[in-house]
Image (cartoon, rainbow, N blue to C red; front, top):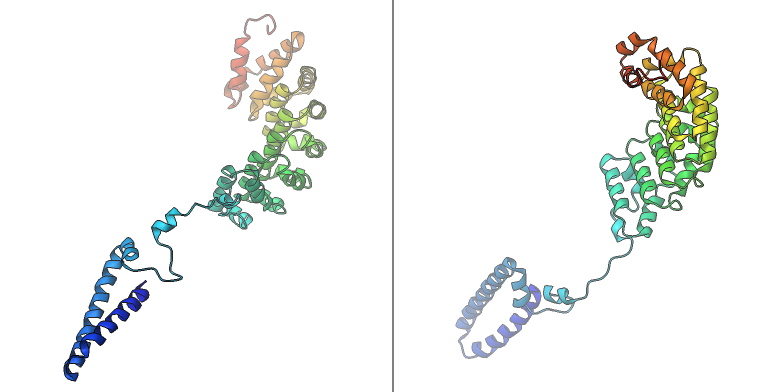
Length: 342
């Protein structure tokens, strides 16, 4: 704009000088020309300072030349262009996997998934995790992105997660980060979508039920699986109940199984537990053992319940001194004096 102003102003100044200087002596003409140049320079400096102090003043003071930017008022008058459907995810698209491995980047990708404008954006972001699931299962930050994908995407959009997890179902379930993703799959996906995943885990149900991390996966399978899957799992626990009850994780799985199994299957599991030598007496010594013991007692009736209560009554000292036996003692006190537990 300064150049255009100078061009226009210079043309008028030259025309004026040609008219006046013709009547002046040569010496005066040279002096006047130098004064005119100084005045022109000063005027340009004054105009530039005014233009720099206000952008709007610069637009109104100088005429627009060809190729010059559109003034702000004209630009505001132009209709706003609607953003592309993928514009909402433009901050992470193309870098999803790299961002997912970073603490701040992982949160950014999760936010982009949660606030995606439409399924096209969401699917585009999730798609960039394809092929990286195995590494993401072991990453302390990327596993949260996979969980968010399962949370917000449709089963079709996160099918690649299921497929890649199935290939390493047992390993992922035993991992401290991977187990979270597998739990999400059972919680949010229809049973038919994770049927193969469930079958692979049920093939090693007893060992996984005793694992510190995989036990939570198996508990989700009990809560969200099909009736057939729960029955198969219940039969496996019934056969190995003595082994499962020796671990804290196994006791937690037993407690959930008593609630999730069909009544008949739960009763068979409870009977297997009281028939195992020393099992009831060992439960107060294990974390989650109290929850498993109370769940077992709640499924028993008649003479079976009476015999179980008498076995706990015989170890009152252990219950009082055990860190985990207080809940069992409190439960038994509620039955004190009842006909079933005398």
